Length: 63
Image (cartoon, rainbow, N blue to C red; front, side, top):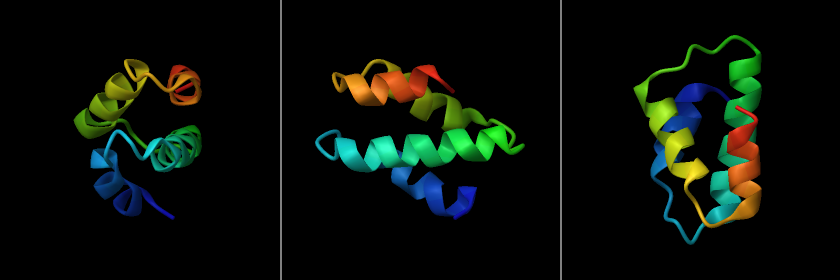
């Protein structure tokens, strides 16, 4: 799975926390492997940091 597969999932509905957590974990690995951050990534991370889901916030905090 690459970034092009993940970006469309950045707009996943708030109630789909599991999907957003999975996207964050995959994104974290892509960034660790050299993916350059962009505005869409930064916005996704920012929104996740403000989310009510503690797991999502924890994952976003590690990025």
